[in-house]
Every structure is written in structure tokens, then in C-alpha cells.
Image 1 (cartoon, rainbow, N blue to C red):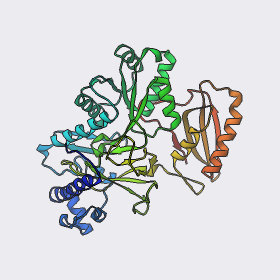
Image 2: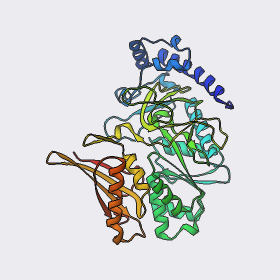
Image 3: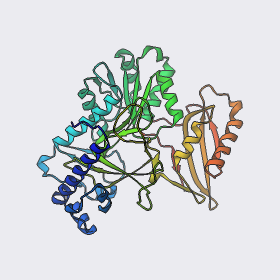
Image 4: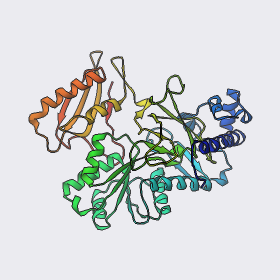
Length: 422
């Protein structure tokens, strides 16, 4: 693996990779050839990194419409594995992998684990899904690549999770944010914190508020919680992670180009502004991505990181462009409410947002759990403070309901917190 020293190294690798990917896709994938011809662009037109703007976008529907082997750009006999998205409706998005694709994925995934400090002395409890989903297979291979002990428990099964945390003294847990909270609360309920040895939590797959992060670390007694990024279309988990300073996600710019675009105008956002992540792979053989709209929202972070890594950074995933709620004419991202609730004392990290229509008018109800040590006598004051902050910062009125700790549903996968019943 080539050493990356500075931005010039990254730009050189990206231009080489972009030229190769565009030619590879044009010559070997009927879908991309059709898209490029329609846009009036040829592989030889790509001379600089700025020429990426000439290329058409690829969307999730393109993958569904190309089922079962969308974007396939190699002969089928070169495909050694497939993975599929975790979506539950309609046709799944199936992505193909050559052996080189698998090797590349595990190489940069291992880089992510090393950035989180994982090595041969660690015992890594893998509490994510196996099978068609990329997470289980990806985590296990990367854990083994860095020489750590892989403990492939899978999601759920809290009895076994807790038993292994105690008996095997796992030092690291890999899971979704929701699973981390669920497991942390179970460890607290069983009084196991002093009997386990968790130092590190590596989580991904969904947004995690500051309040949720604090609760996970407190319940498990862990020192670090790392956010790992990833999506099935972009190999799987591992294309980015924060370092021990937790000042943004370092992403592997030698494997893909990240654009941050306004989801309505498709123009690049200004430095520091929130935009939709659009990714273009640089080495992917079987199912290359060219300007793929992930729908994930984040912002770029400029300047050097204290860790000294040359890899660029973006903020944590702040939400999805298709999660936006239009409420009484106001565009609202759930992350805005998430941030407000994280700053309120006396509540847990769990909440639900319910939007419904009554008598041709929209109403929003926000159900928030009281903190486990909270006093119901404080409920009215907490409710008033939340309503005031939401009115001030989001410019809407909401009905806030304080419920008992543990009253809202937990999930071992991704928690559903938004319910639009209109």
C-alpha cells in the first residue's frame, strides 16, 4: 500500500484512479456507457480532477433497476462474492466484488482499525449482522488482518453478549449505535461494569447524538468511542473513521473521491457548509461507483488534525437528505432536534418524533425519556425548556411529552425515531 504523505500524493492517486475508473466503466459496463454517451462525455475527456463535474450521477434506483447485477463491469466469472444492502422494501441493491475488491476493502478497513488503536492484544466482540450485509464479514476480516482476536457474536442475544464480555474480557465492541446503547444499558442493569474490560467501542450505521455517546461510554466504562463510516455500495464499513482526538472522520481519499454537493442544485457547498456526500471509487473493479449519491449529509473539516494524518476529514454523518421533514413550511432535519436534546439535562438519549395531520393542520409530538435517575417532579420544567429551545433554534412549535426511562423501544440494529404519519 502506497504511503500517503500530503495532499499532492492524494491528488495524484485520485487523478490516476479517476481516469482508470471512467475508462473501465465505459468500456465494460453497458449502464455507464449509456449514461456517459447521454451526457456527451468520453473517457479521454477526463484530464483533471475538476473534470469529474462533467460526469453524470448514479443513484440508488439505478442499482435497483439493474438487479441482480447492477453496474457489473467485469465478466461474471471474476465475481467472487456479492453483498446486498440492508433495505427491507423492494429489490435489494446487490454489489459484486472481485478478489481484488475484497483485498482492497480489507486493507483500508484494517487501516481504520489501526487508527482506532486495535491490534494483536485486543479481543474484538463483533455484534453486527452477518450474511448478505457487509458489516459482519468486513469487520471479521479486518480484525483478523490487524492480528486481533475476532469474537463473531452477531447482533442481539444480550445474554451471550454479556457472558462473553465477562468471560472473554473483550476489549473492543463493534456494533450499531443502537446496539451499543442497548448493550450498555444491559451491562448497567446487571451490574457488570466492574467485571468487564471494554476499552473501545467502534460504531456506525446511524447517527449518534452526544447524549447517546456519553451514555454508551458511561455504561460500558470505555475510554474511546469511534465513528466508522461505510455503505454497501462503497465496499461496506471501513472507508473512514475518526482518530483518538475525535475531531472528524478521516476518509481514505486514495480509494474514493468525496464531493459535498447541495442536494437541490448539485453544486459544491462552501467550505464548512453541510452537503450531500457523493462518492466516486478509484480502484473498484466489479461494481465501480461514479458520482454516487449516498444521501448522507456532512461537512468537510479543513486544516491539519492533531494526529498528523495526511488524510482529509469530514464531520460525523449529520443525517440524510431524504430524511428531511417539511413541517408547516419549515425544512427540518432530525439531527437539528437531536442536537438540541443532547444539551438538555435530566433526559436520556432516546426520543421519538411523531408528525401527524389533524383537521388539515400538521402537529409534531416529541417523546423524550426521563433520565434513569430523574425525578418526575422536574418534567414540566424540562418540557418547557425543550419547547423553548426548539422554538428558538428550529422555529417550530412542538408538543413535548416526557416518558419513563426505558419506555421507548430499543433496537439491536438501527433505531427508528422518526414517525411521519401524515
